[in-house]
Image 1 (cartoon, rainbow, N blue to C red):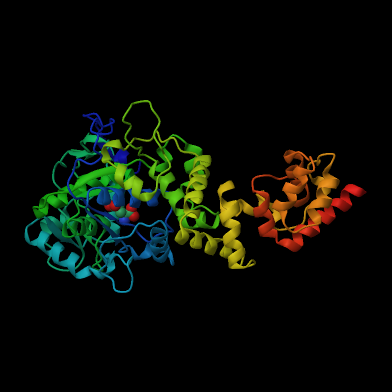
Image 2: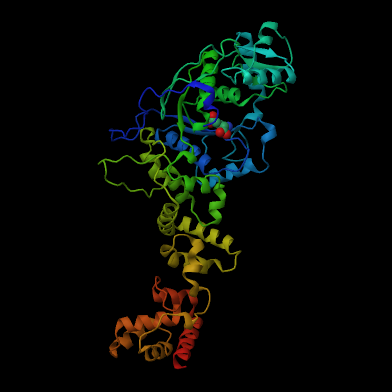
Length: 500
Ligand code: GLU
């Protein structure tokens, strides 16, 4: 965990608040105002999606609001396209923000780079109250302080010696926060009671007086984050565990302003979860790349929700239904059921969820239309929309992903190779000849049955001719998809093959 080693104490005094709740109602808190605060330094990956999702879930399950705030003040780390990718990914997954100060779209978030005047105003307030001061120390001096701090025994990463606090610098330079002698212990909803302190060397005392405003007027992450969380009335901060060591600094800033800090919920990194292999392979895969793999947003959200949370079990030990829509998850979500890392999720579960949600979505005309759109994109509009709609309706429920339809039902796309087909029944020639004499499959089946052919033989013969024996789709549906001409062409081709 980043920079934790620089803290002398990392104590877990109380049992974490993750023991299964005994309450039957999922939520025990009032309306929560949460935010997802991504930095546009890369595409949205699974770990960040989970952070966004838990914030969304807490807000929605308590009747509160979910905000999106772009933390883009570190201009050097901006990645082109990342901002749009974040909005596209959230939108695709159905995580809609409740407030949008930016004109032009429901997902336009608060953007820190639009709020510079606010940070300056609040930095000035801290200077005026003696909680912050200007510092114009040169880079060389700061580097020398850093180097000397490393050589101390014990070493310390808090390096600044407060020269400028005593010099009373009036203008220019950076603004530093005058950190407290001791940081306040705090309670994290997942980690319990924590007391995180920097490691000091008391012979050569240095101070954790971190910069809050850079010399170009840009706020640092810590400062903008705290000012915004307060002004936006955030009640719960759910974020990755890597921010745990920053939390004492944040709380100190709240106190300096005389503000009440929000509740903190630090969720485990994906890499600290049980299935390390999975998180390594998938943790940094962009959310939108799952769409290209035929993964549905419903399945991805379902999958990601279970990375560190599981629905309440009324009867301990009894398994609960894990296939859930976003609405289902909202209704079951509770902070009490967050887990610390023992998430039982794996690759096959993603496709298990995908199969479930695919079958469900096919029943919903609007969602079916969007599946058709996905399929059209996947195949570069190779097939007519009407045909694709039928294809998905008929073949979709038997596959895990629409991307698998062609590989699992190749006969719907190309003629059958009878050499590679399953052997048909001995009386197949007679059956196929009669089927070929009429275009009404059902009628022909009845006729054959009347003549004493076993139903099993009739269907096996037809399947041999139409799909090479691949099952999974009812024969009338296969005929509808390949069309009457191809139906007869295949019956003839199969007959020819059997005659040779
Ligand atoms: N901008 C930070 C990030 O990208 C936000 C951390 C937080 O939620 O406070 O992770």
